Amino acid sequence: MNESITYSLVENLKNQNIILRDAKDEMMSYVGEYTDNKLSKKIMASRHNDMEDIDLYYNTKLDDILNLDFLGKMKDVKVSSECILKHMENDDKILLLVDFDVDGVTSGALGKLMFNNVLEYDNVEVIVNKKTNGYGINDKLVDEAIELHKSFDFKLIITADHGSNNRDGINRLINSLNIDVIVTDHHLIEPSKSPQNVVGFVNPQRDDCDMSNKISGATVLYFLLTYAFLYKNRNKVIPNDTLNTLYYYLTYVGMTIISDMMDMRNYINRKIVIKALAILNSKRIKHNPFWTTVMHHIGNSYFVDETTLSFNLNPKLNTPGRIKNPRLSYETMVANTEGECEMFFQELDALNDKRKDMQVKAVKAKAELEYKNELLYIGLSKEANNIQGILANKKMFDDKFRAAIIFAPTKDKNIIAGSGRLNDEHANLKEMIDIISKDVNYIINHGGHAGAIGIQIRQDENNLEDLFNRLSKEMDKTDIVKDEIYFVDEIIYSNKKLITSLYDVKECGPYGHNYPKPTFVSDFVIKSFRVFKKPNGTYLSMDVKLSVNSNFSVNAFYTLKAFEQDEILNNLYEGKNIRLIYTIDINTFKDINKTSLNVIKVIIL
Ligand SMILES: [Mn+2]
Image: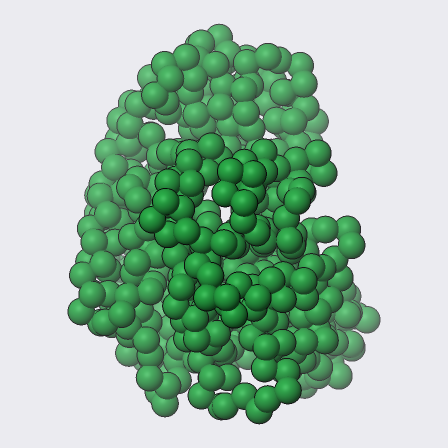
C-alpha cells in the first residue's frame, strides 16, 4: 500500500468523522526505548501524555510497590497499622464498614479475607451500607453499627470506600461507642466535612499524602492492610505461602480498578490489573471458592481478561446494591466452599436477570414526561426506579443523544431522583449542573463527575422542563457537536495485518478508563450475515473479508442502534460493502479461526 493511497483514505475518513489517533513524535521515540513494534509504540504513545507514566510502568516491579517504604508514603498508614496491630494483640473485635458498590463490597470481602488469611486474625465483622440508607456513613448505617455493638463489641472500625465527608456520623460512632476509627477512602475531600478525632485518615486525595490519588477504594484498604502485615513481620522471614496469599488478593483489587473506572494509564493500576489477570489465568494456582465459581460461570476456555470482568462479572456484583441487599455480593466473595459460593452466585445471576427484565420493561414503557432536542434527553418514568443510570446510557446509545438524564419517583412524592450521563469530552455534566443549581431552588441534591451525575429535584413538571432548557443552554456553550467522532489507531488493509494486530493489542493491554482498547478501520466485503432479535436489543453477526477474492473471513459482531437499524439492514440485503470501525476480540486469540471483531460503527459504502 503506497503512502498516497493512505493519505487519501485518511482525508476520506475525516469526512466521516473518523480520525486517526495521533502520537507525538517525542512520545513515539520515548516509547521506542521500550518496544520495537510499530503498532505497539503507536498504541502506547497516543494514550500516554506523561513520560513519567511510561518510565514508571516499565521500570516498576510489584515488589517496588508492596513494601514498607513505598506504602509508607501514604499519610497515616503507619499510625493506622500500629492501631490495628494493637487491637489484634488485645484480641479486640474489629468492624469493617463499607460502601455498597463493587469497590465497597469488594473492600469488605478483601478486608475480611486479608485479616483471616494474611494477618491470621478472625475477630472481624463487616457491615455493608445499603443504597436505601443513603451514601457514606449515614444515620442509618451508624444506627446499625451501634446495634451490632451490643452483640459484637468491636473496639475498632475501619471504613472503606467512604467516610471522607461524614464528620457527623463518624463523631457519633466515636462518642457513643468510645472506639477507635480509621477512615480509608479515595473520594474527594470537602475539608468542612472531613473526619476529626479518628486514629487515621488514609485517603490519597489528602493534600499531605504522597500516594497517587488515582487508586481505588479497595486499593487503599489493601495498601493499609499490606503495610500492617509487613510492619508486623518486619524482622521476620515471611513464608512464601503467605506472600502468595497476599498477592492472590490483588485479584479482588484489580476488579475494583476496573469497576470504579480508575485511570488505566497509571502505572500502579496497570501493574495490579496485570498481576490480577495473570493470577486468574494461571493454570498452576488453585483458586478460592469465589474465583473458581466465577471462572466456571463466566470464564471461557481461554482466559479471563479486563473485558470479561467489566462486562460479565461487575454488573452481577453491582446489582444487589441497586435492587436488593449488597451483602449478597460480599457473601459471594468470601464464601467458604464452592457449594456455598455456587448457591450465592446463582442468586446473583437471578437478581441480574431481574434487573435486565426491569430494564427491558422500562425501555419499552412510555415516559410520563420527556423533553428532548438533538443533543439532550430528559425523561421521567415510573419504571426507571433504581436503574436510571443504565437507562440514561441506553438512551444515549440507542437514540444518539450526547447527554441523557432519567428520573424516577421516590418514596417522597415531592421528590424525583435521576441519573445523568454525558458522553463527550468537550463538556462536564457535573460542572453544568453546578452552575444551574446556583440559579434555581428545585435542585435538592446533586453530585458526580464529568460523565455521570446523580440528582434529586422537587417534583413539578415545570421544574423538569426548566432543567431541560437550562441544561440545553449550558450545552450550547460547549464545543459538543451532534455528530460523533470516532478515533482509530490504524487502518487495516491486509489479512496479515489483521491477524498480527491481535498480538500487538494484547501486548499493550490491559485497557480501561483513559486507556481505550485499540480501534481499527477497514473496508469489508460481506460473505454472509444474520440478525438476532432479543428482548434487550437487535444484534448483527456478519462474516466479512477484506477483498472479494480473499479466502480468509472473520466474524464481526454489532449491536444495532434503534435509529439506524432499518437503513443498515436494507443496505446489507442489497449486498452493499461496508466500512467498519472495530476492536479486535482478544479473548479468543489462541484460535485464529475464532478471531472476531467487535464492531463500534457500521458505514455503508
Ligand atoms: Mn470507590
